[in-house]
Length: 370
Image (cartoon, rainbow, N blue to C red; front, top):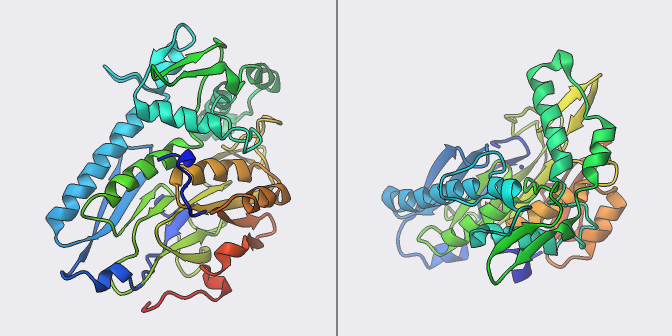
């Protein structure tokens, strides 16, 4: 997995993205001699979100085996990428942030490869997605948590402290040794935060394993990171993935709380927005996506959805593009092969790249046999 594999095709319940579950006639269904039924598994505990897996299988036992393996894999990756808790016998992100400034720490390949992926793509996003921003993001995390728990005493991080923390966010101070699978911090005050990419990266790893299993027709909704496998096998070609109305209900009404529906398969959609993780201070909303330049949340748009095959790449890009003015983000997306995007701007207007229009209901797209 990882973007540097160069796939050819360029967050939950229903909060950021709502799978509309609109499906379409699959070519593989025609050649499938046995009847496949639809099954669903939902679980919580990985990446602090509800994860839903739906897929088509010949029987419940087959689906359960694959879905249980997927759940276990998500939990394994959650522990590996966890910045807040140690686990006995495991060198995870918590371990790195505690010890990697003292000496190189050997880690599992799935953690090493994720850090390498994010570091490799840092320049392409003009530094907007910077996993080395942990010292800054920690201050915002503390302010958000305290302000949500005690709204009457909500506060913003002190700018002097933010500026001091920002002096310890150089991605080049994350030193990787691929031969030994080790990570070293050359700045002792640096810390890594993988929140901008870990869930999508993990979702892609799970999806690739499912594509090699007996359940290849599936969707995974990992708290809004949606990864679609082969098309649904119930007479329709595509899954339907809805773009949430930023002002809509968290649980969502399919008739009133959607901006659009995209009909897709074999791809990922990841949304970054201002309406899920936030707190309010003096009547203003402060979301969790922080600009490395201003050290504050941006207000360029309400949301952006990235559509591309690799979910890790989509997750990383959605953060970067959300932190850019529309024109800058549009230019970046247009320059990338196999990447499409949908923006919901501050005036609630919707912009989308030309390549995704053919899949959008608002642009006349339909899902056969729907």
